[in-house]
Image (tube, rainbow over all chains, first blue to last red):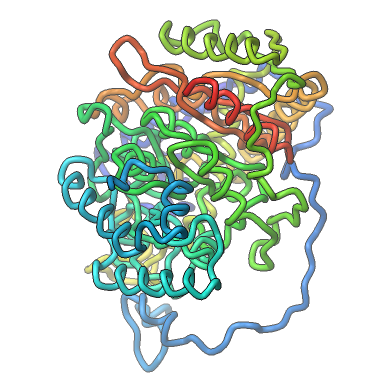
Length: 96
Length: 479
C-alpha cells in the first residue's frame, strides 16, 4: 500500500513539527518525503507479524531513583543562554 | 622533537617522563591548528591560548605531584561540538545553537579532563550529527586532509579530519548510524563505537537517543582503547549507561587472534561496493587467516532493510529530541513574530538547516497518528529481526568483518543533492547502532587514487574487547 504525500499532509506534518515551509521549500519537502516513504515501504517485504518491536536491545530493566533535587540554584547559569529574560525568568510573547 | 605525529599514548609517555612539557605539547598542536585550519576547517571553536596554557600548567603540576597518573595526562584532545563543555561554546554546527554556552560538562569530557587530558577545541560536524559528509554544518564544510577536494565523511568529520591533519592526537566523536566509523575510514584514522550504554550520554546533545554513543577517534587502536577505558562507566545522570566490570579495554591489546572466528557477510560484497574497497577488505581477511584466525563467508540476512529501518527510527527520535529548540530557553530566536506559536515556527524554520528539517518532517510523519504502526512500529520490529540475525551470527563468530563504506570519500558538493543515495552509503554502519553492537573502523590500505580505505570489525554486545583485540592484531601485523 503506497502512502500518498500531498500538500495537506505536508501542511499537517509541518504544524505538528512546528516548521514553516513555504513555496519551494514546501515542494522540496513533499518530494523528499515521498521518496523516503517509498523507500521505507521496502520494509513491507518482511513478515514482522510475530515479532515484538525492539525498543531497546541491551535487555535493560527500568532504572529507578528517588525523586530528590540534587543540583543547587543555578538560575543565573540557566538564564544566561535565554534569548530574552526579565526579572530572573524567561520572557516569551503573550500566550493568551 | 616533532610531537604532532605522535599517538596520544606516545605523547602521554613523553610528558610523564618529563621529556616534554604539557605547555610545549599544547603549543605545538596550536601551531598546526593555526597553519591548517584555514584550509581544513575541522574546528568550530579553538580554546583561547592563554586559558589552554594555564590548564597545561595545572596538569603539569598534577603530574609532578603524582595526582595525575593517567596515560592521557597532558595530552591535548578535541571534542565534537555536540558534546557539552562548560563555558566553551557548543553549537551542534547549527545556527540555532550558534551562541550556546553550556552550564555543565558532559560526563565523557569530564572523565577525560579528570585524567588530565586537555580539551583544545570543539570540532566541526554535520548539523545535529545529521549527515555523512560534514557539509551540512552552519560553519562551513570540512575538507579531507588526504585530498581537500573531498569530504572527510560525517557526521564526526571535524574530529576525524583534525586527527588526520595532526591538529590533535585524538578526539571524541559520536556515532548514531556510523558517524565515528565512516569519517575515520575516509580520513585514514581509527574510530570506535562501543556497545550501547558503555559511555554516558549525559551532555551529548541528543539526536537518536536509543542509537547514540560517544566514542574515540585516534591514530591507532591502542589510543582508542585507552580513551574508551577513561570515558566509560556507569553514570547516574544517564540511566542507560551500564555498570560494566570489564571496561579495562587496554588489557585487550593483544596480537594473538588464533582463537578468533571471523564471519564475512557475503552480501556486503555483492553490489554497490567499489572494487578497490572490496579488494582491500578481503586482503585484510587474508591477513587474519595468516595470523591463524578462521574466516568464513556467510549470509547475514536482512542487510538491505537496515538503512530504511534506521532512518525511520533515527528521524522519529530526532523529531522528538529537537522539539526542545523553540527559542525560549536557549539558542536562536527569530526577530519578528506576532505570537508565541509563530515565534516557535519561525525560530525553528530559520534556525535549522535543510537536512535537519527533512529528518524532523520524516520523523514527525512516522510518529503521527495513523502512520505510527505502519512505519515507526514496523521499523522497531525490523530492528528486532536485525538484532536476531546478528545474535545468530555471533553464535558462530566472534567478529564480523566488512567494509566501513562502499567507496572512498566523495568529492565535496556531490552528495547532498540526492539524500537517498547518501543514506544508502550507510549500509555497513547502521546495523551496529540498531543492534547496539561495538564496532571499530580502521585503515586497511588505499585505493587506486591513494585515498584511505577503512574496514570495520563488529563484535557482539559487550564483546568490545574482541573487537579491540582483532583490530590491534591486524594493525600490528600491517605496520
